[in-house]
Image 1: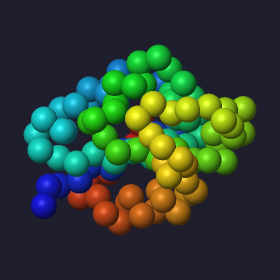
Image 2 (image 1 turned 135 degrees about the horizontal axis):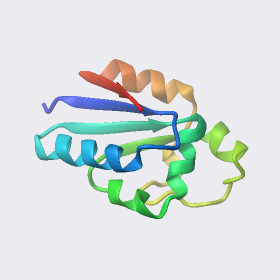
Image 3 (image 1 turned 180 degrees about the vertical axis):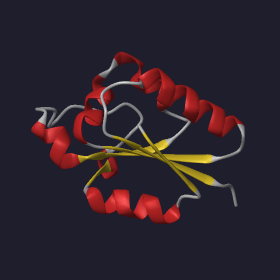
Image 4 (image 1 turned 90 degrees about the vertical axis):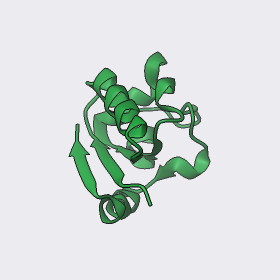
Length: 102
């Protein structure tokens, strides 16, 4: 089983770093899971966000997503099951070998 890297994103900055980290981890054979919350959900609307697809599995805090007025908008590379609560974040912590905060 591959090691798993969890990334918690609560900032609307560092998208290029997030993409780079995800690509490098995937290349090294790691599974990458990301949880976006607070201002991190703003990154889902960045034109470059779609670069994460295929390198990571991610979830978005539904409360924050709707709070920023994005209800009904798409998140590239994610279906409806990706919208979640902080409980999903807790699950991510439990299942990951390594955990990074951005």
